[in-house]
Amino acid sequence: MSFKKQDIFKALETITAPGEGKSMVENNNVTNVVVFGDEVIVDVTISNPTLQAKKKVEVEVMKAIHQHVDQKIDVKVNVKSVPKPKQEDPNLIRGKEIPNIQNIIAIASGKGGVGKSTITANTAITLAKMGFKVGVLDADVYGPSMHLMFDVETERPLSVNVDGRSKMKPIENYGVKLLSLGFFTNPNQAVIWRGPMASKALNQLIFDADWGELDFLLIDLPPGTGDVHLSIVQAVPINGAVVVSTPQNIALADAKKGVAMFQQDSIKVPVLGIIENMAYFTPEELPDNKYYIFGKDGAKHLAEDIDTKFLGEVPLVQSIREAGDVGHPVALQENTPLEEAFSDITKEMVSELLKRNANLPPTEVVRITTMSGCSPVKK
Ligand SMILES: Nc1ncnc2c1ncn2[C@@H]1O[C@H](COP(=O)(O)OP(=O)(O)OP(=O)(O)O)[C@@H](O)[C@H]1O
Image 1: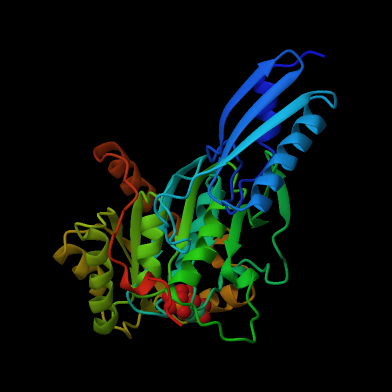
Image 2: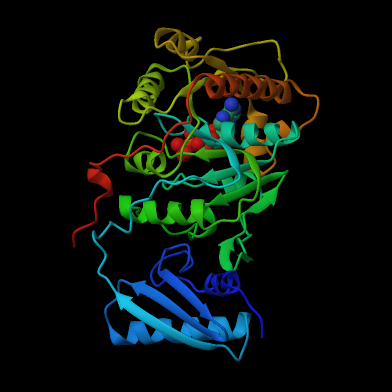
């Protein structure tokens, strides 16, 4: 019988730490491993002081070593319990990088219904058509719609085994990987998301997913500037945010608040720019006619006023709504003015991102200490 200490660690990596999503080794529960010939001594520290928990860990360690290394090894397990120094709120999204994801862009809007999801879906598809590896996380807890726009509403993410742990596999369509809260909610039921619940669900969609290698992860935020936004910026190092607005005054005022939220000292996520959606109405039969029904150049002027890049405009066109509704976004329609409009906007966004990446240090995960909306719900 011949084995090394690394073989034992490898076997112990298959055991999930109690109450944690990661392995015992990764969670630092295994404090020491000693190998003497055919004998192995494993020291484990857990926070649960009960005899039952200690016994369970002991049995799991023995089983893992016998199963993955050798049946005949004489295993001794010393389980110690040390209480957790500080009870962290399990509902808060904790900030850590997502491996293999190069750039994370949050798409936000102050006001609801301005077309943030439409812009996210079309931008993601455009990036994929440009050859990038793209993922979309629909974090719109109030009305997830990305699964409809990508025509995958009947699909459910499967569980896959990644390095011995179960992970959710995003659903893929049009070359874009997608995870949405919409996959897990009943469309006929109103879900009331409280801060902690939303945080927990998003935490899973972000960290318990097998995103694989991505050049871009676009996060479709809910409208507004609430606790879910704070949870997201706490959770992941966002490279930049894009704010979508219509030219209407009431939307612009909210967009301004959205930009201000990202620029707050405690958040400091660079704003890559503003996209004006529904910039003007163009009827299909009169493509040269432009009707500025929500006002003219409002978002362009806002961008100038607050010294933010204007990334481009998208007209209000019936086919954008229709294409979104049938789950086949317009960016998929080759050689059309709308495909070109999204291509221009996406290029501007990427070029701003490249400038940002060159000029600024990586965004640190934002840590906010007071999150009234995300505090545990008192019953
Ligand atoms: N440029 C456009 N032309 C025509 N219809 C559009 C355009 N942009 C968005 N829409 C339509 O407007 C509606 C709202 O758009 P969307 O769901 O993208 O907005 P949102 O800002 O993400 O909304 P929410 O605040 O609910 O998250 C959808 O029916 C969509 O198809």
